[in-house]
Image (cartoon, rainbow, N blue to C red; front, top):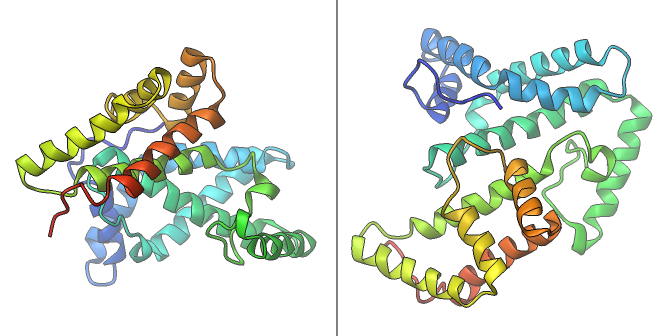
Length: 255
């Protein structure tokens, strides 16, 4: 994975904001675009190779897909929204999620023929009509069913968990409030079975920013606890839902 830090001190989200202001600050916008290109090219190329690997001349096509994706990133930079996220490593994955979504759109628009598009739109319609499978789908988003091995949706699932956790951990600016919140969360973690408690703690309290990708973290838990990654995700989701549903009224919220 390409490290999002380098000689520039500007954060990735700030650079994307500058790109979005390119019409008013052309020089700064172009410089920011070049920096973002350098920071994220390797990761997007890795994803693009997975998308194109079953096609003739896939490496060149992957490079073309990355180039087309960056062109659209340049044009649509103002659409990026990091929300309430503040942690650098979570913002990094948030940006990758946004860029991957753009790549999906580009792949659909420019690299899939008419019959393929018709099939994808049909699948999207079927998924929309099934409440149990609804995800954020538009006519331009390629469903997991069609290209499930092309885009790393495990990263997206893990990112959503990190984002939700950060929102819960930053609900108060007052030190005593943070202490109370931590105590409430720790009480719940301590009530979990030993293995589940270890998975939650290691994921959310021992995660080293920029050191491991979400996929690597899931692989680590698979090996350490001898469990399937779906079970790990279930444990993490259960934790997140419990915090939201049962502890929400007790946790001190910033006004």
